[in-house]
Image 1 (cartoon, helix red, strand yellow):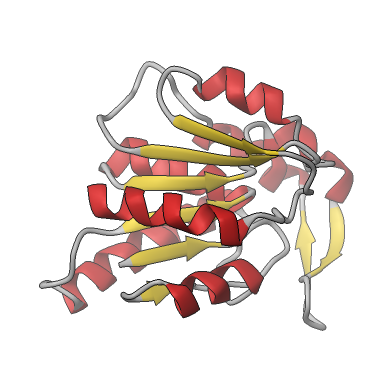
Image 2 (tube, rainbow, N blue to C red):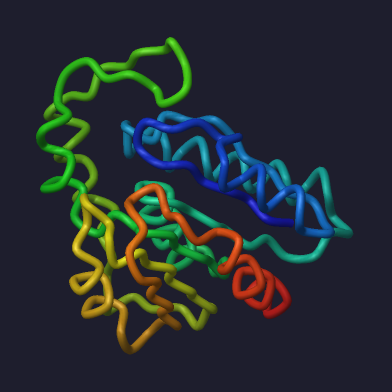
Length: 192
């Protein structure tokens, strides 16, 4: 099973998750969750993953594929529960990159709004990548060099010794290379 975790103001079934579902010969799930609220996001995702495992006991292991904040959560879940993960332009310091979004925000592609608070911003520090707590899991990081929100070089530096990293020329934060990257994602799935 592939579980796609969307980013800060996205929804589960966006372009990347739909593309993966259309071209991967297996189950793909893309839950909607409050990605802007770290504590509630982690609690929801832990329960969601446990429920999926119980409902699909004969399925192959779970692979987490997360984009931006979804990548941030995928990494935390991987290091704490042993899931393999793919991180697409992952957030690595959301308490810095999301500071300008405090207040009311729109969910991408919908009419929904949500409130992002200073407390939620600060809570993201509780789920930071901890290089001293490394489980032996497969991690793949996919980066667009043209990401306008997160400097891909900082992500490369942070994960250089613990993940396979593939960078793509140009692109943007939404990640423009899902078609090229899908075979690499599937390779990680087969390691799960």
